Image (cartoon, rainbow, N blue to C red; front, side):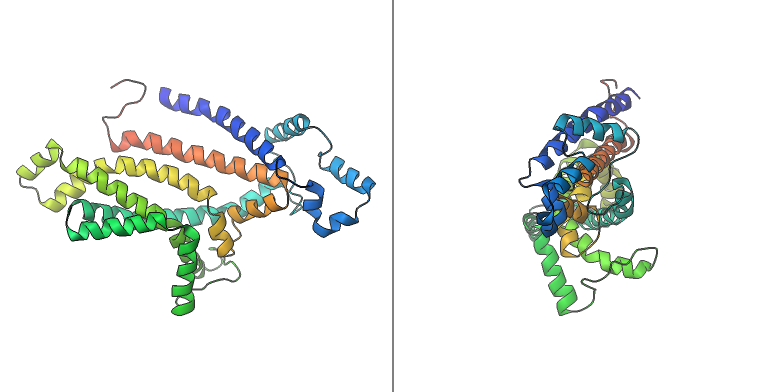
Length: 320
């Protein structure tokens, strides 16, 4: 409980740091915000109209006043109004987040389904040709950028074989579950490839250490089968570093799907924040980044708490 309270106490400090950073960073982007918002129509504004727009969005105030107004709105559940969409930022996040969350979850499932068995397989056949092949594929997977995997997947599976759809109108899961999964499987695979490679390498390394432990040798000497020793005794303890990696990677998946969502024309949070940066939509960028940071911290907190469930020897706060 003490550990949980300490972790929760860090939340406000980190959120404050993220809020200051994103607030300053988006305002350091070169260019006039009003012109970026309106595009070519910005050049048709008179000076009085431009000043009126700046006053309407609060851009005529200094940064300190703008920041205090924004933070004051946060405590009331108001993330501001998006000048691009003309809607409350919170409504846009609620509308777009399910797609990004689904993409991240599917990517994680694909990565674990590939990485865990491959890592165990390589560890139980160390220094054999099959181990070398798995390690080579893992290195290739980690070295290849997501957008390259995405483009290759589109070309091979959609253009060449025509087994999966490429682009088109996004199909919500509630409207057509099978159509939605067929549309999301390629982006999820592209996003999860590097993650799967990392899981493979971490699982292999952890399994090699665990398989040398005394309790594993004891289990083997008691006559248990190799399969039982690996999956019942060794793998649960090897999952701790995999769990750590999964927590960090899941946070990156939530915020790092920008390019993949752009390639596959998926209207998720990553694509929204990219458009918002180009449009200098301050409120939307700040709101989305803060929301992703909160989710990142929440996932990592849950991962830390799951350690004790996986390994009862772990106790936090220096107590055993």
